[in-house]
Structures are given as structure tokens and as C-alpha cells.
Image: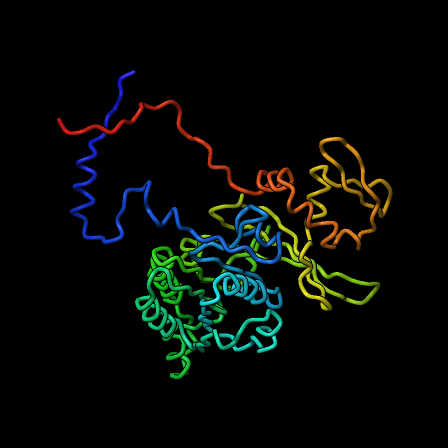
Length: 358
């Protein structure tokens, strides 16, 4: 086989002559070698974000979408809290167009409100101008997380002007404004290692088989690294509603297999169940078995030995779940189930070797 040799001096010449200061040889590029991954306190949220129990939030645009009262803001604040915990110098830039997030929400997640800049918004153009001004002044290495709640509730400036003039026609330019906003913002998020979390609304597509559509047109869909559509079912104790069982539907992801469905439970008393969703996965993988109806027991995968029987409530504890979360075989099983596998897509290729100019 003939060896193909590349010209190292040409590569260095390109690097020297580029006008883009952050250009680097790919093998040494900080944009790939210095990617953040911020784990949250909820393992199945980490799986939704990265396909891994020990993964988490990464820089770029992450979107939580769903109907009203679907915990979108809460999931966003969970990620903000995780980021601020990892970086004590981090601040939260909170853009607010809904004015429906009570102070209690921030207190529930134990977010230090002295580290939050609350910025109220009335239209998309206002957001576009302000966020670009902010991003221009941020340097890579400064720790900032941005939350926008929500893009779905933001009018365009034209909509506002039409309303003031008594016009009721729909603004066909709004989708273009949203697309322009995210097209301008997303490069800065990557270049400066900034996570941005956006809340959005969904609506039902009209047709024989209606499905949830993310608002904002194609702009938000194309720009986002991750898009999650939330579904929910009521959790009842008899006839009393005591919480919700959410399904995180992975609509788009750079890390997780699309259309994955990831369960997370939230109780009115107690909040997010940290260990929700893990038991079903452990059962599917043979790490836990049901020796009798209503009973659960761990399985030693190396010996097949079955441990002590536990009731459901006893499985949702640190004593039961934490050893599983530390089990390398269980972590690998979850990763294989949810994470995108980036294997080789090429067959045999010529060997590339560096050479000096003749």
C-alpha cells in the first residue's frame, strides 16, 4: 500500500497566516480538549444531557420544551445550580420574558441570588441587542451560565408596534428574528465555553397523527445542541395527586440517541426524586431482580447471587442506589443504552505520516 504523506510545513504556514486568532491544529485545539461537563444531582438528567450517569451539561445551547406547567424552568435552574456549585465564581444571567418564576424557585434550588443578574425582556430585538453586548465582553475562562425563560413568550418588536397601532395581523418575521438571534449567539457559546439553557413552548401539529412541535421555527432547532420535549403523567396516592412522572423525550442531541425516553419523577413534597428512573434500567440490565411481587433485590453479576429483598421505597435510597451508580458495569450498560457511539465509519485508509519538505 502506498503511504500518503502530508506537508507539515504547509500546515504551519496556514496556522501562521490565519487571521483567526483561535485557530489551532485540531489535535491541540482547546475547543475540543477543554470541553466542560457539569453533572447535576440527578443521574437520569445527566443521562439525558450526555448519555452517561457521570456526564452532564456541556457548553452550547440546550433547550427544554413542553406545554405549560411541565417543570421546564425547574430543570433549567437545576442545571444553573449545578454549574454555579462547580464554579464558585460563576454567575447566572437570567433573561425573563414570562415574569412567572417566583423567588421561591431560586430558593428551592439554593441559588445565591447575589450571583444572579435578572434581566426582564419585552421583545426579541431587545434580547438580541443585550445578549450580544454581554457576550462581546465575556472572555473564555470566565464562568457564566445563561438561562432564557422563555423564547416562546417573546414577541417581536413588530408585533408590539402593530398592537399599538391597532393591527391584529400575524408577524411573519418573528421566526426570522429567532433564527437570527440564535445564529448570532451560538458561535460565542462554543468559543467562550458558555452553556445557555432556553425554555420554549410546544404546540400540537394539526393532522391525523398530531405530534409536539417546538416553537420558534427552524432557527432554534438548527442552532440547539440539545432539545428535550417534556411529557408528564400524574402520580396519585389514591385519588390525590402527589406529583408528576416526567418523560424527557430526546428530540435532538449531540450525545444521546434521538427519541430516547428518560424518566424523572417529581413529588410535591420532596421535589425531584434523585434516583427516579434507575430501578427500571437496573431491572432491564439484570442488576436488580424481582424475587416476588412488590419486592426487589440486587444481583451480583459476577456470581449470580441475589441480595436482600427490599420494598420499592427502600430502593429509592442512597444505601440501595449509590453502589449501583459506582458500578462500572452498570455505568457502561447505561452508556451503551443511551449514548451515541462514535465508532469508525471508514474502512481501511492510507497511513498518514508527517514529512519534511524535500
